[in-house]
Amino acid sequence: MKLLILQEKLKQGLNIVERISSKSLTLPILNNILISTEKNFLNLAATDLEIGINWWVLTKIEKEGKITIPSRLFSNFINLLPNKKINLEVKDNSLFIECENYKTQIKGLSAEEFPIIPKITHGDTISIEISSFCKSLNQIADIAVPSTTRPEISGIYFLFQKNLITIAATDSFRLGEKKIFLKSNSPLEKEYSLILPQKTAKELINIFNEKQGELKMHFSPNQVMFEYPMEETPHAQIQVVSRLIEGEYPNYQEIIPKKCTTQLILNKDEFLNQVKTASLFSGKINEVKIKANPEEKNIEIFSQSSEIGEYQSSVSAKTKGEPLEISFNHRFLLDGLLSIKTPEIIFELNQESGPGVLKAMGDDTYIYVVMPIKAS
Figure (cartoon, rainbow, N blue to C red):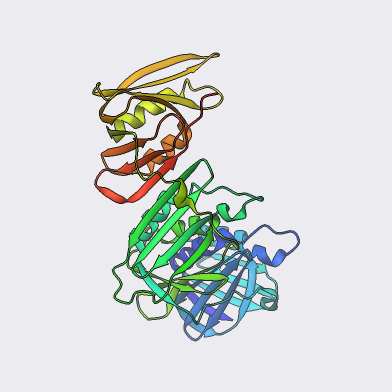
């Protein structure tokens, strides 16, 4: 293999793929990046056996070939080079790198040892606007938590229905649900549901968050592939393939209240700052109390710790319904508030032991359900 490429281009590809190369003692090949060429394309690939990433770029290829190279070492070295042309050449399972007055040799492993990253060539495909997809996923991805007893809630649930995607995640204490309406003229002919690993969801946000255009999703029974096109050619620039979590996602719709006993309309930033302040005095169980009385034009916020002291304040609110006093874990409450971007929020409450629901004012595509701390 022999080729010429700009440092900036190579650095861009390495920043995308090297993140998932795992530090595996049992399979050292997973610590490596596969570098290969075909026609005028350079391909970088990495996998941890759960996620596989391919990245392509058009460049000047003098001789085709392939090799695997330790990802961290290769990436760190390329990042230190000036933004000039780099010569890459493979000789006897070693990669020789030249750039201006920099010369190095990195020993690699045979490309034949590298695991095959599957590609989904059959099945349904949809296109989704990248910015909308990443923003929606960002509202949901952090809610899921690893669970060995209930692996299905370790991931992000996706339901595809014609021109609608519903995304949901829960950790049993809170739940987020986001609806994305597709502009595609070719709706899915049948429904799909899948559970995407949380790690994959976060990698998708990291990789595509700054990109524009559309992302293609390809479905298969056990895997899903996300594909981003190259500007100069119809060839893909990035492919992310992920395994799916097996199992049936819980029927979370059952815990979303259909009505509420008390409704609060609040300025998000004011409420957020008061909850943050109350959290400083919330004690070991992170408890923050909210007292609402429809006759008042505000709500009271209270927290206390036997070791630190106590805090009490009020926040302006439009309140209707029944008076109540209810406690929440401040961390869960803050996460929900931070995931909403509108200036005003709706907070629906259901007695002292029922779940609370946070919504964005004027946007019914996102809801955040949080369970209260029940009085002992």
